Image (cartoon, rainbow, N blue to C red; front, side, top):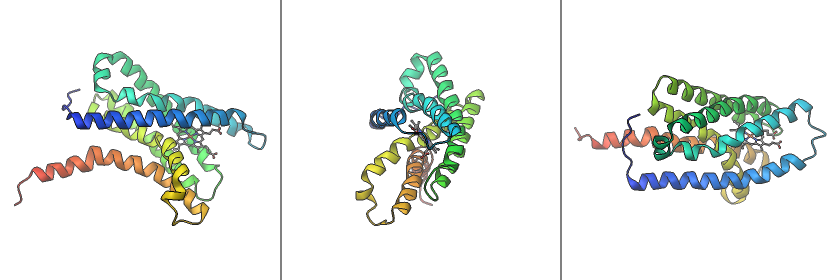
Length: 214
Ligand code: HEM
C-alpha cells in the first residue's frame, strides 16, 4: 500500500487514543469477565448463555488487536503477522456481530434492542467490507473499514464510560429508561462520528480550504 506520511502530532494523537482505548478496554473487560463467571444464570435460557459465552470469547481479541494493526511501522515490519491478526480480527468481528443481533433482540429494557440491533448489522457489514477490500487489494478503503469495525466494537468501552458518568453528563434526562436508550445510541454514534471526521469530513474541508475563493 502506498501511504501518505502523517505529521508527528497526528501520529502521536493516534497512538494516544489507541493506548487509552487499550487500557480502558482491559479495565472494563476484567470486571466483565468476573461478572460473567460468578453471575447467577438460572433465569437465563441455555441458548442465551451459550451465545453470550461465544460472544465473549470472540470479542476478546477484537478489543486488543487493533492498536497493533493500525501501526504502520508494525505492518511494514511484520506483514505476515498483520495478515494473520487481521483475519482473526475480522473473522472474530463477523462471528461477534452475528451473536450480537439475537442477543440485542432479546435484551431487557424497552427500546434498547434498536440501537444494538442496528449496529450489530452495521458491524457485520463493516467487517465484511474490510475483508472484501483487502481481497481486492484496495488497502486504503480496507483500513477505513477496519477503523469503522473497531469503532463499533469500542462501544463496549464507551457505554461503560457513559454509564459511570451519566449522572454528570446527562442530568437533564431524568427518566432512567430514556437515559439508558440515549446512552446506547451515543456509545455507537460517537466513535463512528470520530472515524468519519478523520477519514471523510475533515479531509474534504481541507480540500475545500485549499481552493481559491472564486
Ligand atoms: C469487542 C467489544 C465487545 C466486548 C469485549 C463485549 C463483551 C460483552 C460481555 C462481557 C457481555 C456480557 C456477557 C455476560 O452475560 O456475562 C456482552 C453482552 C452483550 N453484548 Fe457485547 N461485547 C463487545 C461488543 C459488542 C457490540 C459492538 C455489540 C452490539 C453491536 C454487543 C452486543 C451485546 C449484547 C446485545 C449483549 C447482551 C446484553 C444483555 O443481555 O443485557 N457487544 N458483551
